[in-house]
Length: 381
Image (cartoon, rainbow, N blue to C red; front, side, top):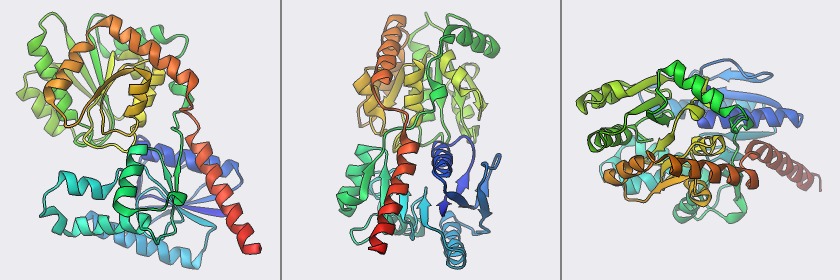
């Protein structure tokens, strides 16, 4: 039996892409053959998949998306599969994994009226509606209660089609017994002194995840506190030019280190003193929980789907909406208190011991398997 997995772009450092890889792995373990359709694939191919690159070209993103949908629909018509699982919103899905925030909610609340007249808006609104509309048939796997409420408010999607999954942290992110040794080694390698306060920004899409806010906060903290030395590590896949200019203009260029995408994230989580994630929108934010299980205190905006875990664990500081730059700077200042960071670490680690933060991909693959079994049973009956 074959499952088709659809996503526009794969690269090894994206949170949604890692979840996609987890779903594929656990579906294969259940005996399914996995066919993957994408426009762009970066990095090594996943073991055992039938990878079909879609030649979708266009001047705009929504043109490419439409051509992707048309090409895949034609290919599936001639080479059918048991079920179609999407990781981006698009028509024709049997199951959608809701890694992205509600587009319509963001467009209505964060954009002007002119944007809603654009072809881009019409495309993404239509593709989202085709997934969530009342008369649709797509089963939705959710990772955030706050996003569930948005989809229900805008589309009135039946509750019977909405299924909440637990988070899916990789167990290699758990704080290891030799954490202090690895911390010292990583800081030495990066040239970070033992007394320096090291903030970590981790994620692709710098604008959406608020890197400009972090750099501004660091500059304000630098002016406020002459008694401490601070550094910011920026890790993730994006274009850094605008943010390097902001750091120069803020006179903290030497304090902001752009590392790009990295494979040693586990060690960076141990090396840092706090993760800063003041995102403008974030359906979940797996990095928040990766920090929590590593014992790294977190500063996060309350719009992030997984911010509730940080609040419930008392593992950091959650910034209330609407965002205020001074509140972020105050939170970064609070992290200069070593005892406060110690409390956040211990409470976060205790929370991780009593909470399922690990089984998303197993649970998602099991849902798809059970749904297909039920569907086959209904047909045979």
